[in-house]
Length: 101
Image (cartoon, rainbow, N blue to C red; front, side, top):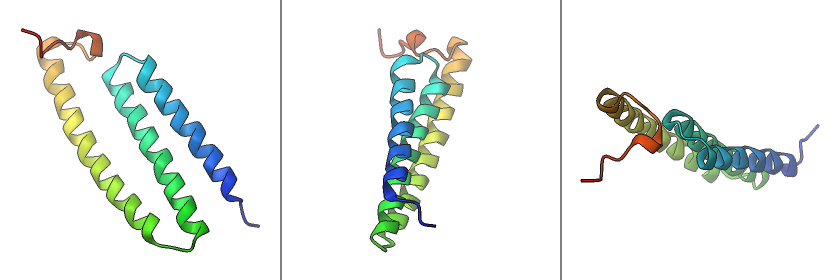
């Protein structure tokens, strides 16, 4: 039994919407990073679905590169959050005013 591509696209749209809502409404830096990762995975699901639909490996290769960049982004982002937490003792983005004089 073959699952239609529309199911994948609907699931991807729902995941992306949850990620956008998480980024826009949450104030915790960790939750914002998790929401960004959720949005990246929603896009990856869409790329894999279209790659399967058109019998091409281009989507799989692109998803691999997106995952590598996302892993690097998480490593740098979490390092920044830990560094800011050590100085401010808070991970709420409202408390981050490091660029102000």
